[in-house]
Length: 145
Image (cartoon, rainbow, N blue to C red; front, side, top):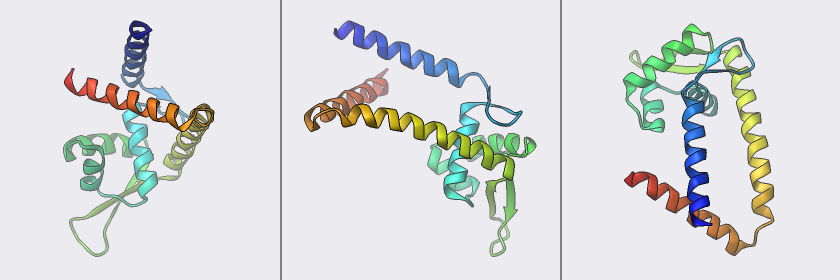
C-alpha cells in the first residue's frame, strides 16, 4: 500500500509539472501558461494591485511579475493604470477579455472544489484529519527533496 501511495503521488506531481510546462487555450484565442492564468486569477481577486504586491503574493521577484504582466498586456488580458495619488505607483487590473479568463478559471476551480468537498464531506472528522496529515507530510517531503 505504501509503495503504491508514493508511486501515485510522484505520478501526480509529474503530471502537474508536465501540464504547467505547456500553454493551453482557455476561453479566448490566447495560449496561456498556468502561471499566467494564476496571475490573472490573483489580479481578479484583488482588483487593483501593484507589481510589488503581486511579487509578495507569489513569492517571486518583481522582475518575474513584470515579465509576465508584459505578456498579458500584449495579449490584452490586463491593463495598467497610474495611481492618481502617487506618481510611481501603477495599478494592474483585468481587461474585459481578462475577466472572461478569470471567470472561466474560477468556475473550473469551483467545480474541482465541489468534487473534493463532497468526498471529504463523506469522511469522519478523524479521517479528514488523517488526510490533512498526509498532505502536510507530502509538503514537508517536497521541502527536503
